[in-house]
Image 1 (cartoon, rainbow, N blue to C red):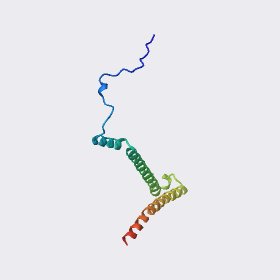
Image 2 (spheres, one colour; image 1 turned 90 degrees about the horizontal axis):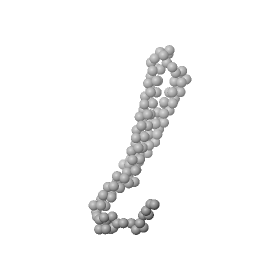
Image 3 (cartoon, rainbow, N blue to C red; image 1 turned 60 degrees about the vertical axis):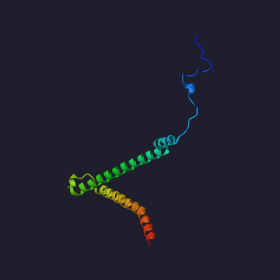
Image 4 (spheres, rainbow, N blue to C red; image 1 turned 90 degrees about the vertical axis):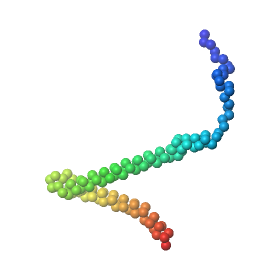
Length: 126
């Protein structure tokens, strides 16, 4: 027959002298602030920013490599004899339109972003 646990918990040796109150000193507050920097909301935001930065860098590398591949294909079709090329003139024209459209779109996006800044600087200097 198993024995039933006693209803009253037995005190552990030496814990009777421990005070339940803890005084917070400025040193402890500094420690709490440093832990907040390491593990708090700021750390999560910084981790998210790092992740987004990595995503942007990978995207830029991907676009750059893709543009380089398109440029090499176009140059090969330009310098190689006709019997060594694999794309039809219509496909090359579509490639040229896509590549040119992407370049013009990137320039337009950057100019929209940069021109208002330049205009506001000129207004501020007058």
